[in-house]
Length: 514
View (cartoon, rainbow, N blue to C red):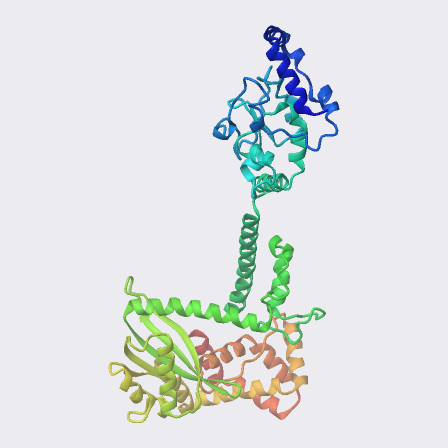
């Protein structure tokens, strides 16, 4: 049956009998909600099952709904709908406004809102909208229905269910629903960019905490003068070196280090990484020293040669005064490898060291070295060549070297002192070169209840070493005499007789007192 003929028949009947039409309208208005015809039970739908399309847009209503002649293309979007924060507006009314469709009146039904979560209703316009397409639609729908659900609203309640079903399956609606779902997920858990940024910040903080512990271990080992690496640092090694073993020890008590697993390509425990950490610590310390020195405005430089196996190096020290409290500071600055031992090579190395730290332009008022000719020479020594770069830098022979030389030469000039130190050197040689004699010395200490100790070798250049040698002899004087008396040899007898001399005992006590 043609739907247009049906409506034309109804309209013609109404026009021919106005009284009948008025009577029908009065019955419809007095019947209340009981007279609302549900779409699923409408006999008209059963008759129209063979239709090619069951949709009727709101623009077709004026000619089919009698007095409801509203042009929705001119109606602005409703202002009482939900936004992305509040969600769809789904009001539950005791009775929704009616719309006439021929002789029948229909209204919006609340159970439609329960069935479609995306559906919302505008009381202001008495129209339904798709919340997801209206707020999150990324592409224009192909059908006119999709456009109405987003913009003007849909209010053909007679065909509402079929229209909602078709819109629910459209690609434009599915895209909007997907965007809406992603938005709700981003509110709860954060969007993808926020998650990436948060994960990146957490990763950066974890790596910083990890590096803090590595630096702490490196500074501890450096401060204590302990070696970093071992001979075998593999996973199966019993001793992987002090650096890695310290980290393993800390991880037993540190929850973070115990649970944190650094990336395989950035553990920062390899020899190269350890050297890099040491270098960074060195630069930080040097930077603080240089900043204090620049604030002081003037300084003095001290340098001495230091041999490292087959490598000759120049140790450079800086001495300055803090302007705020007058405190005197003396710090090690750098080690510079020497290519040659001549005065020119040493001077250039010293000047390069100062230039590397930006100190070559500051006022240098003094230079201090030992008394070697290559360092102290008036015309060809380092002190003379260094004054070409720093004219104000007067040369001062190192007082520590001078005092050490005075003491050593004085001891060699006095016969009793010379014999005393010769006796000490012979005692050290006697007990250190023979394992049998050394074991008897240990047994004598144990018998007398003394702490194990060793005799100290004399030094020709450092007086402090000679003092330690004297202190070691005084501490172990009784076990030394006991061993020498038990050992039957001419050398032991000669050493024992020398130890019993009044001059040796007197000088030992003087060294202890002074």
